[in-house]
Length: 155
Image 1 (cartoon, helix red, strand yellow):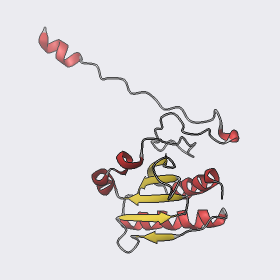
Image 2 (cartoon, helix red, strand yellow; image 1 turned 135 degrees about the vertical axis):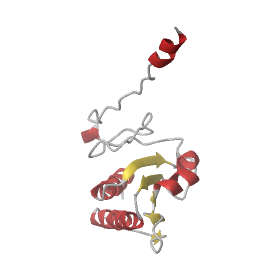
Image 3 (cartoon, rainbow, N blue to C red; image 1 turned 90 degrees about the vertical axis):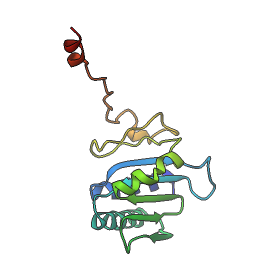
Image 4 (tube, rainbow, N blue to C red; image 1 turned 90 degrees about the horizontal axis):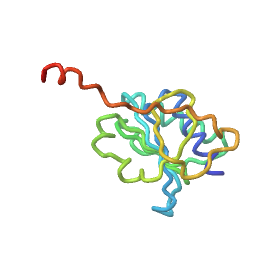
């Protein structure tokens, strides 16, 4: 299965169950075991399990295979191995603690998400699909807060 089709199926499965902060990373330069790592957050054990199930169904429907799933019994961190892509679905506290983005995240892949879910990507590590080109939602740049209170007290 084409890696772009696989990552699109994974992201679609995550979006169907309202995953938060979906990130996709190109890892082909780091390991030969898989080409993509997808990291997403779920707010509860029930949601992480539902996200994993949705990813499995979306990948199977797109014609891909699921190698294995780990962590569904507890649901705090569920891993879905899709062969060329590995999906980590974590609750926010575990995601912050383990910080997988630091390990795998030096080459983010830009994807067009269905809604503005907070995805912030750097330059794409590979071109997006032809149909998605130029259609990505713009990310607003943060401006520093004004320091008016400090100026007033200094006068």
